[in-house]
Image 1 (cartoon, one colour):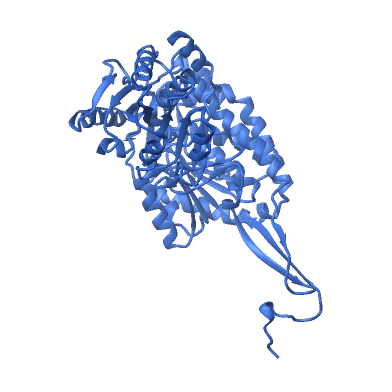
Image 2: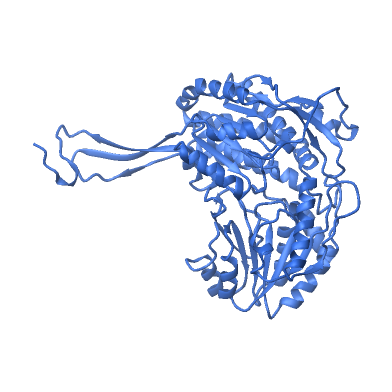
Length: 544
């Protein structure tokens, strides 16, 4: 069964979900003193050539390329070698970029939405042409396996398709007026400059979700990616630049300012950034939300997740097993929607744990660019330390390590995906650790499972495996899962673009992608038109 299970997983296209643990606003970067040029690894040269990347790259784009800040290395998480460098921007260069964006925002918002959609369509085609090398760069720089790297780029392509249609369907509503000879409606207009601060774990797709929708809604976009994935930010911006040049549009529509804490903080504080989209940790997101709120801006927060899968005794166990393995091990446990907690009905608990443990022990861990690899490295050495601390916390808090629990003694940031058995009340279970550690626990009933699922402070994703219609509707109802995503019989990861993506509680409440998430990128006006020639007042008020 394990061999078939792994083969099926290897064929799965990973659906991108923005994840959590970026410290992009306050985290210090690995800055180097630039000395002399270094060559691109010959194994990676084709990727760099197809994406117009050099070993040394500028990290600021606002119509022209620049950057006078520190040089920052991008490291290959699989072996720790330097794959390239980016010269980042400064607060002054962010200010210059925002000035340019102010100059062009009127032009773009006055461009008809269908024509804006046509530009996004061309961006979609340009991204599709570079899907293979861009997906490979994501795998090389971030560490996720190649099918996931390419799946992330595909998600950006898909959201461009969605945005194209949105360009002809952005709509308000007509509301009956109580006054004769009056017409009342709601009108949606562009909000203004949108700032995007994205996380390391989805270095392409999170920007894509925001950028495609923001652009078609009539807003210029400025991007600061995670400092450890600057090459991906530069590669995407170069692809978009060509589309803008081809259409005679100003490059500042899709601006990039790679940088550190100072650049991120300035973006958060600047009044010219009317909407700030932040994907990262709850701790940083709380500060971002407070800062933006103080200046009465809008924030879109996609923060921590502590996601659970519930397996009832009537579930399809093979389906549940494959789903848990995919959701808990994919991206080496570094997604916001990774399954962190597994709640198993006591009647099938031992059988399920035995099968899952065997499947874990068969997972191929290795170079994410090699075919057949299912689990790549953690992104940084710091993440390895978090993994080690998490394992020690499990032991100290009365839990058991059922499989895994070790750092692999080899080059790179490799660890063993781990299954624990522990109380749901343990502190280590209550807090998200952005590594492949899966906490398992027994449940007695669906009500017991819902209580445990909802007991944590985060509320992003959840999933229930059952064949019972009563359980199904209870799970998605008002007394069921309190998460923004409440799945049935599929992993906690794997959201489609058609619905809005996001979560509740300390996950931040933001919504991106489909449904009516586009409204966050616009401002709403209530418009009443009096064509009667009279002046009847609302609520029957007489003022004569």
